[in-house]
Structures are given as structure tokens and as C-alpha cells.
Length: 401
View 1 (tube, rainbow, N blue to C red):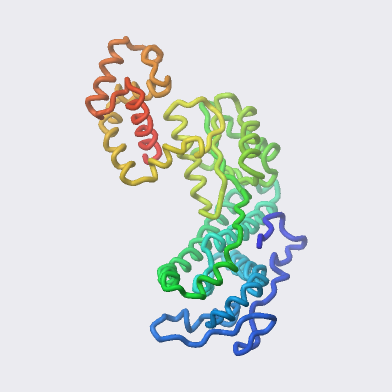
View 2 (view 1 turned 120 degrees about the horizontal axis):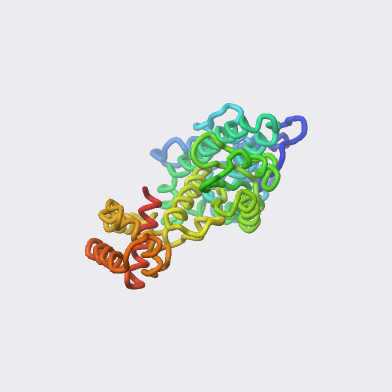
């Protein structure tokens, strides 16, 4: 089902020129092994029952359980056609610069009615939009590298809109599908077997963020082009440099970023996150949050990932835990002397002597400050459990700031 995310076809020809139309000439008798179209069911099942064949462009379903069971193999044979149909809608969205909302929702109605899995559908959408974004990046000449970043960012905004439209269309029918499954609907039970295919989430793109005390921003585009991706989109317009590049997998992405970091200097920090069907902008946000966290906790400069901070991110994404930890730490973070003391103690893993030396204060002074932190938060920085809790609270405060 995968739609290649490689370079665009020569001559700018249509990515889906070989698409096989899904229309059937008859809706009464099946052809090519396809099941018959369903009969009209009870009224009140919304417009999707009237549009079950999605304007005639979808495969037909069968209301008969025995026929449906025999139709598993024909449905599996139409995988590629369904994937091409989805990819065609995505490409037309890029041409029009907006998704065809009504058509996508019609398709999602049909998809969910027949037991289609949302993750599989979003994976096809992501692979297609990745290919189209890559086409823009490759098609932009080296002389237009600055323009390449602007175009790439505009394309990923559109790609996110397309994915959101598919997600919204499927979410509309999710409750009805769950109810059908609970009632033992044969349509959902049988066709889920045909649609539950392995969803391969290749790491086509990575979001990269770079920071450092004396970062030479002018060198970044040439280094990225040489070491990472010759068609990478480098955004230096504001804040930290952001990069959209293709990398093979997580292991190679870390190794490649480490080479770039070495070339930029030992004090440079780089965060890298894979872009998956969950969204295009979320990895950029996560990369910035990881950078903020590594800087706040004074972690040794290197290549950082969200996977390096699983507990911290889990706590930040759990509402009850997040609200409690932020409230506990808030009074400490408003007092500069207590905040810097806690940061220094966390950095030196609880070693009070080294923390006091780094802050240029007396040992008794740091003991007094740590006692104040205990009185305010209820957690003692002098115990392993208390220091771990305060470290997580500090990380959550940084991630949600």
C-alpha cells in the first residue's frame, strides 16, 4: 500500500498516473469478484447510508453474512486501488492548496462503515503527503534554499490540514462503528480482517532543532546540505534554527546529527524527532521542548530526543500529575535563589558540596535553601525520592512553560 516518498517522476508527471478507477458499472450484480451493493436500510442512519458507495467511486458492501465472508479475498485484492484513491485525493489537495473536505468525509464514511482502521488510513495519507512535500524540496534549486524552507513549511501546514480532515471525517462515524461492533455487525467484523494490514511508519522526515552559546548560524545550511540532506529545508528566520530533512531511521539520525554537532562545536545541542502520521508540527514542538529541558537541567551537550526523557514527557502529558507538580513547584520557581539552588543540585545529582561550589555559596547557605524548598514543596531534596520528584516537577514545569 505504500506510496513512494522518493523523488518526483521525471517531467513532472502525475504521481498517481497509473491510478485504477474504483467505479463499478453495475450496482446490482458484482463484477470481478466484488460484492453486491447493499440495500437501503432503515431511515435515520444519516446521509452516509445514501452515499454508501461514495458517489459510485467505492467498492460495494454486501448485507449478507455468507457473501461477506466469501468476499474477504476480493476486498484484499483492492487494497492498492483504495490506497491510490486516497493518494489521489491528497495530491489534488496539494494542487488546489486545500483539502476537498466533502469528498474526504464521504470516503471516511465509507471507510469506517466497512471496518477500516484509522491508523492505516492516516499512514497512507502521511506517506503520500511526505512524497509531495519531498517533491517540492527536491524541485527547488540550491540557489533558492531560503525559499525552499518557506515552501516546505507551507506544504507541511497543508499536509497537517489534510490529515486533520481525514481524522475528522473518521471521528464522525467512530461512535456508530463501535455501536455496530457491540451489536455484532457482520460488516465491521468481516471487513476489519481485510483492512487490518501492517501499518509501516517509515521515518521519512525528521524535525531538527539546534542551539548553542556561540552558534555559527551561517554555517548550518552548508553543513546540513553536506552531512544530512542535500535538499533539506533550513529555517533561520527566527529563534532556534529548524530543519526538515529526510533520514533513514532513528539510529542514523542520531549519528548524523552528532557529526553536525561536532562540526559546530562541543557546546552545541541538537534535538531530533521523527515525523510520523501523528502530525508534522508536533515533532518540531517536541524538539524545542527537549532542547528547553536539556538546557534547564544543564544536561551535558549532545544529541537529545524525547525518548531520552520518557518519565518527564509522560508526566507532562498526564493532566492530574502535571497540574499537581506545577502547583507544587511554582512558589520555588518564583524565587531566584531557590530556583538556581534546585537546578544546581539536580545537575550535580544531589551532591550538595559541588552545587554550593558552583553557586559560590557556603555549605550552610545551601542547606538553609534546601530546607526552605522542603518546607514549600513537601519534598526533601536531601532524599533520593524527594530529589527525583523535584527533578520531574522541574522537567514538567519546563515542558509546559
